[in-house]
Every structure is written in C-alpha cells, then in structure tokens.
Image (tube, rainbow, N blue to C red; front, side):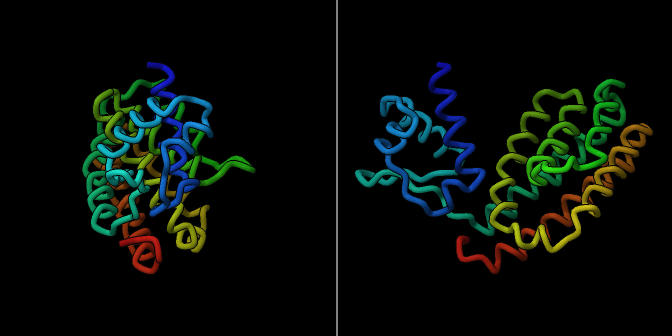
Length: 210
C-alpha cells in the first residue's frame, strides 16, 4: 500500500508541477523504469489520476496528461471560491490560537523560496486552520490542482508584483487573527477571484489549453 501511494504521489506531483506537461504521452513501462518498480503500481496510480481528471487512458495506446481546459479551470476556481472563504471564516470563528499564530510565517516570502510553493503552503495552512478535516482536505486538493494552472500562466503571475500578493495574504491573516470571520471570508473571496481573472486571461493566450 505504501509503495502504491508513493508512486501515485510522485506521478501526481510531476503532473501538477508541469514536469509532465499538459498533453504529454505517458507509458507505464517508462514510468516503471524511472521509479524502479513493476508496472502494476504505476498502472494503479494512473487509474487513480484518471479519476482526478489529470490523465486520460487510451486503449492500447497508453496514457496522456490531460490538456488544461478553460472550462475545467473555471470549475476548479469556482469551487475554490466556495470552499476557501468558508475555511477562512471557520478559522476566524473557531480556529485554535496556535493555528492562527502559525499563519504569521506567511507574512513574508523567504529569500530563495519558490512563490508557488509559498502560495500553496499559505492557502493550505489557512484551510487547515478551519479545524474541519474534510473541508481542509477538499481545499488542499483544489489548491494543489490549481498549481498546474498557475505554472502554465506563470508569465501573468510574474506580471503582478509578488509583494502585492503577499500583502493580500497579510490582510487575510490580520482578519483571521482578529476573529473577524466576515472580513476574512470577503478578503479570501476577492483574492481568489483576482487569481481567477489573471489565470483565465493567461490560459486564453496559451497554446496548451483546449
């Protein structure tokens, strides 16, 4: 079970980080050789990823990393617009003092830290601070899948001053730590909505979408 989970997580990470780019063909044997395992755990991992709509199975032709769809991107971010403000509100209302204090680590971006890694960690920590394991797990999955969208639209992200995005995170942290649930929900909703506009605009100009 541990081996299967490790292979699944490894391939999933490759796809979300675009090291396996959208549209790329994937072969069980090649992946088995890369990870030095049999084809069985690779096949099981790819079938799990098919359920997540990250790969498509082609009979007798192997697998393909799914291209990024504008429609899927909209759906994913719309789901985030529902889940993440709810997590922020719950964190403000009932999050533990320790979880809320830990958010201070995201007020700045450490030198040498990848912004996408930092951004994912912040949104994940905020969701976990809600105290709802089920809601936090759903949010974490959406946030991780959004990484692929962000990396494909990286030029648009670079076009916006990172300091501004970090400042928005700090505002959200302030609201949550003040236990102002209404403000926390509003700030997160605005933050994710701005990301949606930026990402969709970039994807519309990208050659890897469909």
